[in-house]
Image 1 (cartoon, helix red, strand yellow):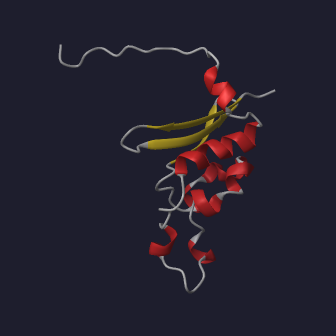
Image 2: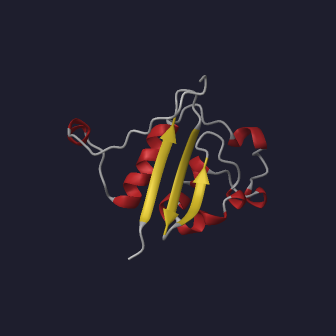
Amino acid sequence: MRARVYSAWWNVNANNLLSFAAGGENVLAIDALFPGRQEHHAGLARWPELQAMTDFFAAPASEDLDEEEDEDDLDDRAGYDWRAACLAVIDRSTGARLTGEWLEQPHPYVTVRMPDATR
């Protein structure tokens, strides 16, 4: 069995990355706020749960645009919670549920200390 790893990362500045790796290969990494076009993500076909959510995560290919749509319409995601969407696609992919009970349980973690750049 090949390992599959999913990651949703963001910081206070909304820098973010939704990524998927399988068998030691980074298959796809996508910015949830500014995902770009589907054709920019070659690994999209290998993550079917994300591919099913491309209405949110990636704009359609140029040739798939309706005549009434323009580039500006595709970037109107103000009403969407991109953080929740990242977690939802991982939830659908893994079947793991992020519940309130899970949040209350202790979990293993690693702390990485970075050297102080001012020294």
